[in-house]
Structures are given as structure tokens and as C-alpha cells.
Image (cartoon, rainbow, N blue to C red; front, side):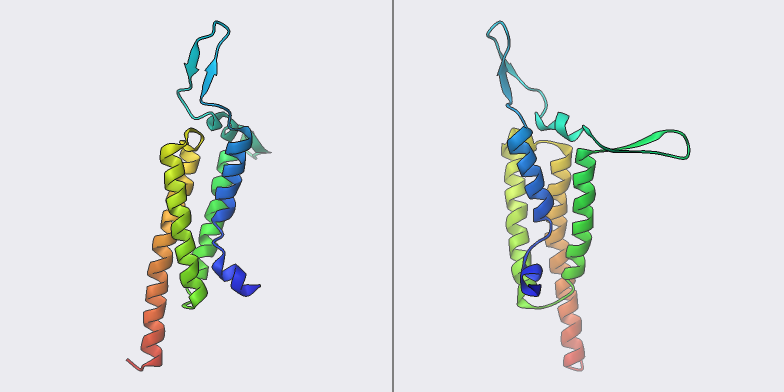
Length: 156
């Protein structure tokens, strides 16, 4: 089980969650109005869903703090990015496989962001940037950790 946890990139979870929301509830980019004219959406159809209220809490100041669905996905991704950076401190084979899969996830996110209308949102751009940071930070942290392991083992 630990090997699967080491190989599995956790940022897949918010990316898959966004994909499920986009595919199931995103809506079309083009629509036909009552007069038969073709209307082209100016923004991603997914934007309205991401801006819906997810959670609201009353504050001591008297206002209500509202967390949107898009914000909740980004918050979840930040937590998983932190855990991914912690996982990258190990130097085993599972970590290297994890970095490779993370790179594939970044490429997939980049392609979706550039080519698919429901993915052209700020929330998905931040997820894409986080997958890039996962790849870069993971590789850098692994290299530094491996160099320190080598230095301790080799008395360098």
C-alpha cells in the first residue's frame, strides 16, 4: 500500500474532480437562441459552476465568508501539493515514477487548458500551475535529498 501511495501523485485527485465537474455540468460553448441564431459563449461555461457557493461561515465582524466551489478545489490542491513536496524528500524508485506521472498530468492539464473551452478558467489555470510546481519542486527536492544521501554515505 505504501508503494502505491508513493507512486500515486495526489494532485490527480483535484484534477479528476475538476474534469468530472466539467464533463458532467460544464455545458456547451455554443447554443442556439429562440430566433435560431448561433450564440458563442464569451467565457467558459464552467465558470458559473465554479463561482457557486460551496460553504458560508458567519464571521465575528458580522459579514459572511463564502467559499466557492472553485476555491474549494484550489484549497484541496494546495493541501495535496504540500503532501507531494513532503513525499518528494525520499529518493527511491517510487519517487522517480511519481515525478514521471506528475509530468504526464501537467502535460494533460496544459493540453486541456489550451484546447478545451470548459478548462479555460482561472481555477484550472491554477491547478495546471500547481502540477508544474509539483514536477519542478519534486525533482529539485529529490536531487538535493539524493545529493545529501550520497554525501553522508560516501563521507564526502
